[in-house]
Structures are given as structure tokens and as C-alpha cells.
Image (cartoon, rainbow, N blue to C red; front, side):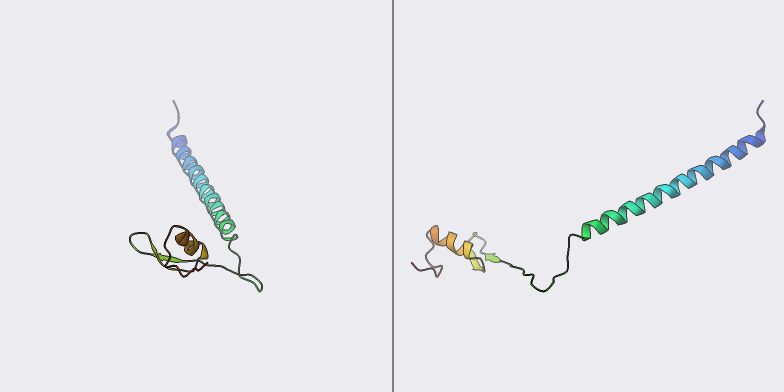
Length: 90
């Protein structure tokens, strides 16, 4: 027969082992999470002298016609479709 004292020690050892494994798992998860997060944000760079940004926006009616736009492509496409009130002249 097995001694009763050994099973209590085995349970304690098993709990310590599981606790250590869980702590290691959490630490690895944190390291991977932070490294993935920081590498993701490294694609965003601060604006420096000489850099530029071009933004185009268009506001449309519910029917799909543009009301206000900063894009010359939208104006040209509407003119080609026959909407002559675009302000473009030949």
C-alpha cells in the first residue's frame, strides 16, 4: 500500500508546477502582446518637415449625386456622365 503522506506532497508539488506553468504562460502572453502592439504602432510615423498629406472628401445627396467635393476626379466623372452644372467648361 502507498503511504498517505506522499499523496499530499504530490498534490502540493503538482499545484506548484501548475502555478509556475500558468505564470510562465501569462508572462509569455504579455511579452507577445506588447511586442505585437508596438510593432503595429511603428507603422505610424510622426510628420516631419517636408512631408505632406492630401485629403479628398465628397458629400453626397441621398440619391448618390455629389454636393460638395475637393476631388477633381469626382467633378470630371460627373461632367462625363452628362451633369453639366459642374463648373467645368471646354
